[in-house]
Image (cartoon, rainbow, N blue to C red; front, side):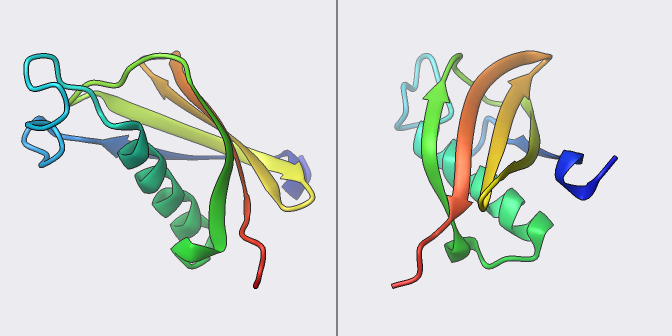
Amino acid sequence: MSVTDMVETGRLLFPAEHAAFPDHFPENPLVPGALLLDETLAVLAGARGLPYEALEVRQAKFVQPVRPDQVIDISWEDAGKGFMDVSLRVADVTVAVLTVGLRARP
């Protein structure tokens, strides 16, 4: 397997006590999409040894909601030209797919 064929993985979990849930549908809490994207970028940046600011979400599709205390498995692979294809899954169900790229330098 070449380096470009490698799939890398990580995990996220947002406990029910997280500060986002009282304001994000208190009777039926969901992980806010912005929080999910933010923490996913942090995982990717850390795994790649990059500063958080070096990455940006180029495209995102949320397929299923994520609830408190669900384990989110993140997998990503190089897609070429500085992009990564990212998949977020809960219990083997895809909840979001992303394209992440290097942020353009000013």
